[in-house]
Each structure stands twice: as structure tokens, then as C-alpha cells.
Length: 303
Image 1 (cartoon, helix red, strand yellow):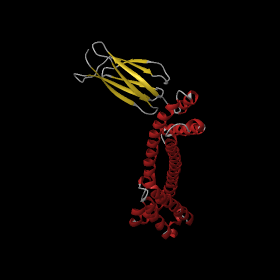
Image 2 (cartoon, rainbow, N blue to C red):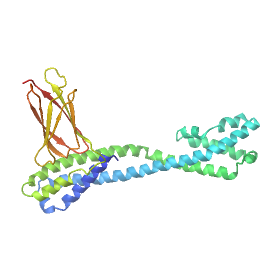
Image 3 (cartoon, rainbow, N blue to C red):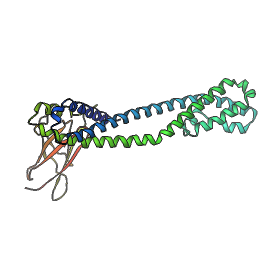
């Protein structure tokens, strides 16, 4: 789960818990129960999806460890059996055991245990001859155990292969459902903005995504000339937060290619004004959501 996914999930759970604490207020909001049910269901699904993904990731880590055990067990056996085959002129055995650890590591996971089983069976059938090469029954047992353990892990991964793809699809489904439901809830809660100011202020706080790992790009702007469709450089951009949005106005200028960016903005709505001598000023409204980038192209007409 990405940093944004984790922060969004945390916000959604915190928001649900906050709304639960005010039944006397929310019960008077038309349509609240239906939207809240969608949020509750989305949070439950999102949390279950996270647990399933963590379990799957743990299984993949186990598979890597078992592969290392199998390769590290089989590699020395290959070298000793290759020495035996070379010294005795047994080209048939040499062809089937002359593998390095790096070669074994590169084999597909379904092919590796098959190759290792062939090596094990040759070891078991030539045990007496291989005694002087310090290959014993214990070596054969350890290798067979490593093969069996790896095979079991591969079977589990194969069973979960479709599940892994489904987890990604399900996560996107729940996240989309939650985003849509929270936008609806924002509209509903706005109904009591004037009559329940403390509740409304608290709601705005829990709707903010927790701080992430770093500052992210919030708004990307490009200015172009209406007639030529070419970039407009050195135009002045002023981004001002609307009422209810934290922050101060920020002024920038467009670069040679007509672009400019704003990063680390608080969630909310903003008014963006673009002006340049010789052109008519343009004003647009923007909404900023943490973890998402708003991109806008502003067309300037000659004054």
C-alpha cells in the first residue's frame, strides 16, 4: 500500500469514527445514513484488503527464503557431483549436474524444483560412489526437504496468483467508493455549517489527510496565448485560499514554457489569478486534495 493509500485509509477511518460520535447532529442531515453506510462498507473492505495484501507479501518473502535454502543446498552437491562425473568420464551425469548457484537462481520458480529433483535422484542412486566426495545420506535428505518446502510454497503462490491481481482491483474499487462517498458527505455536512459550527470545524479537521513522507505537488499550471497557442512566459500567478482553507496567498511567475507549480498546499478550494501586461486577466477556481495533483491550462486573450 502506497504512502497516499495509507494516509487516505487513516483519514477515512478517523472521519467515520468522528461522525459516529455525533448521532444527535447527523440524524438530522437528510441522506446521511445512506452515505455513511457506503463509507463504513468502504472502510471495512479497505482494511480487509490491506490485511490480505500483508499476508500475501509475507508469503512472497517466505518463498524467497526457501528458494535461497534450496539453491544453497543444491549448489555444493552439483559441484561435487560434477567433479565425480568429470573424473569418471560420466558425461551423462555431468550434463545434468553441472550448474552453478547463479544459474539455479535464474531458473523460473516452477522449473527450479524439477531440476533440483533430478540432481537429488542422481545423488541417491550413486550414493556409494559419491561417498569419497563427501556426499552422504544427510545431504540427500536436506536437499529433498528443501525441494519439498519450496514446492509447497510455489503451490501456495500459484493459488494466490489470481488473488494478488484481485487485491489491486479491490483496493482501487474501495478507494473509488470512499472518495465518491466522502465528497457526498462533504456536501451533506455543509448543511449544518452555520447551525453546528464546532461540529463542522471538527469535521474539516478529520477530513484532512495526515502528513505524508514529503511535500507533494498540488497544482500544475500552464499559460498559453489564445491566438497563437504558444506558451506565455513571465505571467504573474496569484493563488489565494478561499474561506475555510488554511494558508496565505502565493505569487509566482510562469517559466519560459508557460508553466508553474504549487506544492504542499492544504486541502480546500483556491482562487487562481493569472495576469500579464497586454493580456486580459483570467481567474479560475481550484480544489486541492492531498495526494492528488490538479492540472490546469489557462488561455490568455490579448487586451
